[in-house]
Image (cartoon, rainbow, N blue to C red; front, side, top):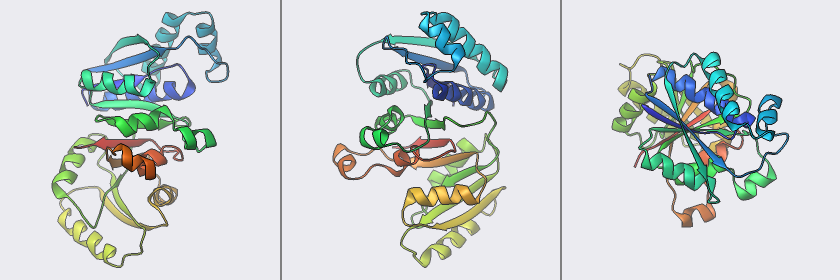
Length: 274
């Protein structure tokens, strides 16, 4: 995670994402956090805290940016550097973000999300969802109510029935930098009796890894299973392997990762592996 891209519109959710980017950046000793702002010319009351709304309503963008960076460093202890990229464009924001991430070879996109389900977002989808759909870069979705803290307990969703040890080792190497306390889980939708045996088999295979826990959650669908898991197990970060769906797939079924960001109160790290 040497390069992190963080879209910033000065809303409460994006400021929260900036703080999360700094926490992650400090853990990974990130070389660069780039803030990307897309100017639309609109400042809507209610989306911002008073301090940023006052600055933006007076077109004092530079002071707002300076305050956001200073505040983030103070609250997170991030000691790395920032770069700024401002874009004036009428193109779709999610496309601009993904293009910037791919072109700049960023390792992570860190974005805010409301973390709750609303009719508008179910129908149209949030910007974060659209980034998740299209991105080939890892994405961290940070809910609005997240409290600044380093993740101590990570929940890693894996497929027990089709466990890929090589992929697990790759993921473990990446996320164990944050904490050795990793809880592997899977959601048993069909009440498959073989799942318990598969979990026991994987547990034996990974016995040499310190700090691993294992759980199997019964639920009617993946998203409700993940939410049930986090209700039962204190979790600071949910890590999932996210697929890039073709358009025809999206017409019938959204990725459960994209659905989850509408509901979760826990940050979600979607790892994108091709």
